[in-house]
Image (tube, rainbow, N blue to C red):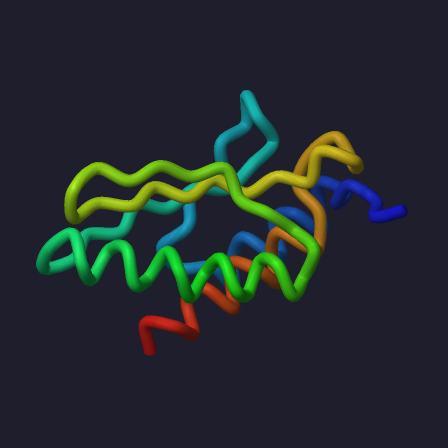
Length: 96
């Protein structure tokens, strides 16, 4: 089972994630993305879906036209885990 990050490990991990913000009420990280149009947003979601499925770790997310919001937390761990940090880094790599 995946373990929840300790406060010190969480702070170190968050320092490496530039555009993700910590959501203390959910012990999660979140990020909003904006694209040119719906097609670009949907294509991005499809690429994230493939990463998430491969990792066996699925985001809470929403899409409105050209905007995608992603929130990551490991429900089995009861909060933020290394799985969330790894998936956030993979998502960021899609935009590089």
